[in-house]
Image: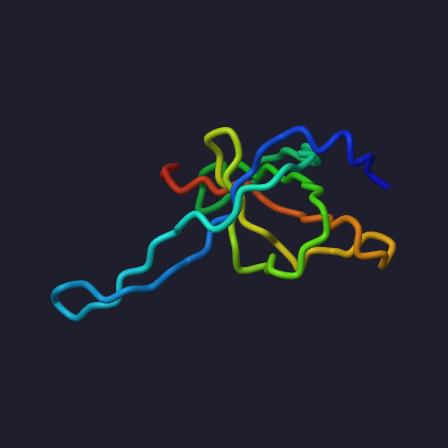
Length: 112
């Protein structure tokens, strides 16, 4: 169990919102949804070969107070980095007190 006193980092959840532009085309954009207190723990860092180039992989586990509105299709923004949620948030010990969110850093600007 994570001590609630260790929820000492601010993270922001992002949701993908689709809107229509002036030409009638769908346009998707990640928008801020909710900012909460969290514990952020790096879990694994590695690289693997993707199309003859090294691709970084950085995973974290993030703990927040229990909420029902957090889903796996969201992203998390923390200290200038963006993380995709890689599975459904886990209700720790099924007590509706804490969520464990496993996520992976998004490297959109890296060319492969």
